[in-house]
Length: 329
Image 1 (tube, helix red, strand yellow):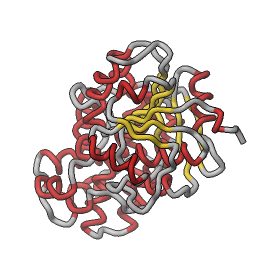
Image 2: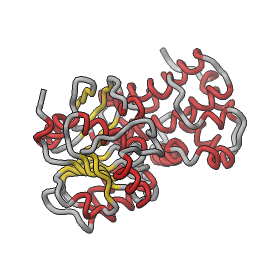
Image 3: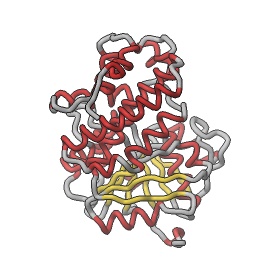
Image 4: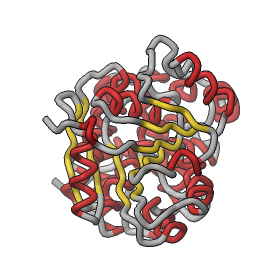
């Protein structure tokens, strides 16, 4: 196994559950991590107590994880920068990062979704704001808590810069953390966005207690829609059959850690959002529906139904409308 302790430190922008879990994973391999948080109190608490009490209060962080208050001091001594913020904050984070970025810096993000303003894939936003630095995305079926405690996990890394892709794979791989590589950045990003939309559907299904038969049918339909939209946009079908497509769907559909369950239990969108916070699925549903409107030949009744439930006050049972549709065998 690669001696990761010899690697230079990495900067992680975002001390939420996912950013912290990835910091724990990398520190477990002997790597030094510089972790940025927008919250000065969180920075102080992590450095003083070695706990991120907001997300993993029971887990003591390695002393090789150092929290910092500013992006500038976080990225100054590093080459690789990992962004782990919600999609709504991705563009703003890039703008803050741009002021201190140097030509040697390389960027990878673990954010799933599309741009909050333009509905574009995140790699296009990164290109527009940061220019031609090396870029990659990390995605796949990965609950943060399971990564934090070291349970076996497999993810996908995507980049169109092969040397950077291989360097990142070596940094993240471990006996408990498998990394598959691809150059289909668009496919990996779309897989994450559609998966977040389907998470809403599965939360509703669980809340309504429709059962395993329904979930299996919806999962199959979701994969069909993911592939159809991806191919229309130029992504590779094989990507959606891998970890960042089918794998992420299976995780969402079979393990209810989704925060969208409240919707299926009868709460309105407004009440559910107030109680659980804005989930990525609420945002992704709007973006995916926008892309479908740009490609009307793509049939996606499930993603369309999620959008109509969230934003057009449609009854939740329209998730089942596709059961009454027939397709050629």
